[in-house]
Length: 251
Image (cartoon, rainbow, N blue to C red; front, side, top):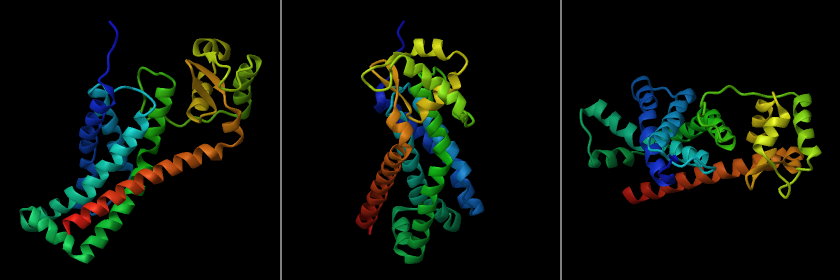
C-alpha cells in the first residue's frame, strides 16, 4: 500500500505543538535559573521536526524552512508571552491579561525582555543550525530515516574530485543533463557519504528525478550562503516586525 502523508499544513501544526514542548527546558532554565543556553534550542528544533513527523507531514524541500520558522515562532512565544506570565506567577502567585499589559508598560522590563529576545533568536539560530542541516540533507538524499544529530562530515579534495569525475564522464554538469540516483550510487560505490555532503552543500543538485554537478555553486559558494543569510534575516525581521506591531496594539 502506498504511504500517504497529510501535507505541509497538518505537518506544520504538529511542528508547532512539538516545538512548544521543546521550549520547556528553555523556559524552565530562564525562569528558575535566569540563564539561557543555545544548546537548549536543539530540543526546540528536534521537537518541531518530531511533531511534524508524528502528524505525517509531507517530506519535501520546504520542511527545513518550516522547522526553522516554527522554531523561531516557538521561541518568540516562549520569550515574549509564556516567560513573562510565569514570572508574574512566580512573583505574585497568579497572572492575568491586565497584569501582563502592566508588566509591558514598564520600560525597564520591556527593554530587558526585548534584549533577551534578540539573544534568544541568536541562540536559536546557533542551536538548531545542525538539526536543520541534517533535515535538509536527509530530505535531499531521500532518506527514510533522518538522523537529526548526525555529526558533521567533511570529505577531502581527493574524495570530492573522484565523485566529480563521475558526473564529468557522463557530461552531467548542468541542469539540462542529469544522472538517475541509482546510477550515481553504482558509479561512486563506497563514496555515498561524499555524495550526501555535496548534495547538502548544493554542489550536487537534483533536477527532474536525477542529479547534476553544479559548477557555479562549487566555484561561488558564497552566493548560496548569501541566499540562506538573506532568507534567515527576512524571516527574523518579519517576526520581529510582527511582535512590534502586536506590542503597539497591546500598548
